[in-house]
Length: 393
Image (tube, rainbow, N blue to C red):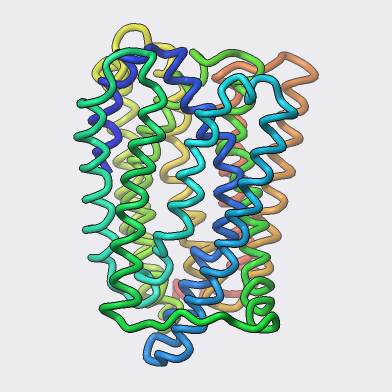
């Protein structure tokens, strides 16, 4: 969780906010392709693995099908990027950077987090991720010494991704003896259709994730991308405990459907995330100065606004991922997320047609979109009597 913040002060000072912003802009663009390659299997495949964890034959079918789909989508994402490179001059100018940044898509294919989450062996994710990120940490200080070295960032990240992927696949196919087999079209189509609603949801979520950086980069500049990225990076670290908790507990909740347990988790996680937000609010200026220096002070307000999304998302995670999905309301969950993307776009279009974009108002529409998601998720948990039951059990 903390390793990206360890390298950040060094990178922002060595590369400068313009060059660093360009690297972040490339990651934001490729981020759309990551959603395509992921295709929602982080939830659907985790659910399937958790249900059939004792059936080795079924596990092999799931793993094989998901890897086939992801591999095909990765090749399609490469094709899409090639088209974008030749259509958009800004991307063509830095085409090597964008192609190297495709490591993000490859990582999503060869590091099957969903498998380890499904069998509830989170230690593998911890070990593998830590090794790959420590590799990145060491190589950053060895190879990056000036703005001209910016291409080493995606290159080093790619090395870490390959290392993590090879180790994880070795564990799955050698140590756990899962067998990879080509699957018939009907089987592959089944898993594709099963994950489609989650994919659409993730795509909608990405609208107010990577799109913010794309908008800022296209309309304001790369320095502003760096400001937004700093606020987002700190916020992502703040969200990690909730994300880890959600990933670790989802298989258990999906299997047991214990409403009393979910209610307890909600209370503890909400309290913890509110405390995290308050802590950042009172120390945001010091955090920005420590990480980015005086030049990055415009990121303070971005951090304060985005930090408020931490307790908001903690609530929506419980209402959506831990209540609606395990209790058979995946389509309802997807509908809420799809509409959230529409809500975000409407707000963005209003800004574009009136006052114009700033880093601050882009951050604000992210917060308001998250509030909409949380309120709507809560509405549906009450509509289907899930929240009332968890209150009374």
